[in-house]
Image (cartoon, rainbow, N blue to C red):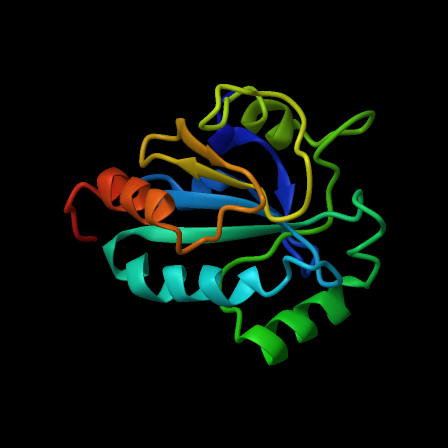
Length: 165
């Protein structure tokens, strides 16, 4: 099954797949509202605004597996993200990124190694996975790497390849 076929649920409860974003460069991020890294939402939104005209989308996947830092309801998550950080990129329903019950999307994403060559479990909130226009995972950036870090911006630029949508 390709990444595009894996069933997902939007934050407002509607069925979805990444297939709706086929042909775009995607940055999938497990997010949380009560985390020391939550301010990364601001840089994620800025990336989205900067690159979306070229076919780029940030996708936020709330996760409550790390010290219960995403304990809010879908409505509260949506409100928090919108009012605090002006988030307009797509957010999905809460899911598990590790362990028993790990969502199939994250079963696939976590097969890809990070810059140090380590694949496997997500270590914390705000881990980022870059997905090419053809649905291949082409980059993995651990939590401390800020969304606007040069290595992420360069990877996005490279994946976009100068193509405009």
